[in-house]
Amino acid sequence: MQIPKMLVWLAAAAAAPAAGAQGSPAADDWVLPNFAYRLNLEVSNPGSGPVRALATVPVVPAQAVAPNFPGRLAIAVLVNEGGRAPSVLPSQADDLDGDGFPDQFEFPVSLAPGERRRVQIYYSTTLHDEIYYPRRVQAKHNYGYNFQTVTLESELIGYRTYGAFFLDVQGRVAGHPGLHNDLVGYLSIRRDFEEGRDIFHVGETLGLGGIFLRREGQVYQPPFNVPDYAHKPQPEMAPHYRVISRGPLRAIVEAALERWTVAGDVFRLQARYSIDAGEGFVRCRFEAVPVNVAPGHVYELGIGVRDLPDESLRFFEGCLVVAGEQDKRTGPLGLAVYFAPADWEGPESVATRESGNRAAISRRRLGPGQAVEGDYAAAAAWSRSGIADLPGYLSGLKASVNARVGVSDFRFERTPRPEKLDAEAQ
Image (cartoon, rainbow, N blue to C red; front, side, top):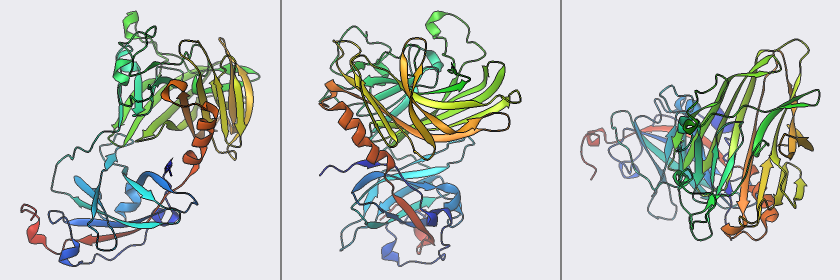
């Protein structure tokens, strides 16, 4: 059975962890002798299906139990039962806000329904090194639009944005997975390559997962950037990008539009996009904040996907899928957005200059003193990636988007052999 890739959930116990005693474990239980400290925790699968995902440890709650976690170097170890040897888990730490300190620490887990496993994270405040785990995702500023285009990708599919807070798509040909969004700016869209190609024409639409505002029936989209090859100065009102993490397990980028002027009103819009190893969909966390909005001006905020020729449409609770064929040479493709029905309503038809779109509308309104923040996910699929049923595949990703993994029971320990800290591990 194929195990789906799923969203990590921080259990309530992780938000308020139990303060484990600063004990002294048995020497033979301390498997990494160079490390002074260890954070013990439990990962769990509360769902009815198997889960394979990145477990995310929030740093601030962890530090309430384990001082200075994750230190300058941390290594995650899975405790195996029945006398089996422990397993080292690839891991990474992410500084989300750019203040120089990590905000989350993640590692992969694989759990059966209802299963619980113990993980030990050894960390040091004196050792300083970087462990090079195999890279399974990538993010970067990309050729073609200088620092105003940003890409993120897994081995399955690539995405990029260059304005308007939507995603464009780079498909992978079946049998040729990889990390090569770098090539997009160099490969002609009029030729086919085994590595894949830009398969989606966005134009003046919502693209994939595009954010928009609407007031009194008028639709407003964030602006595009000016490409570097146009030899024009960047306009004042244009989004800018920051690469938060290039992986190896989770790629994260951020788009920020500090002053978005809409019909005389001014907003700040920020979105953080991420993709995990082995996943084909992107998660987005966004925030729209009023800066200077006239009294009585209230806006709807929505997300959507552009219509496709010869389109088929599927809508399930919390999932909107369209599939069609933009041109014969590229072949069929599909687009989807995923959202919590408690926070969004729809679908609705939304017209933009080039095409119609299908959209979901936030149940919260944006206006003077009223910010809107939220989460959603977006995905694309291409027939030449070996996916015969595009709507079925994209609909099936909803379970992966919504599934949960628990992280809880934080406990802190110090090494029982401090004399080993400055010696080579034996």
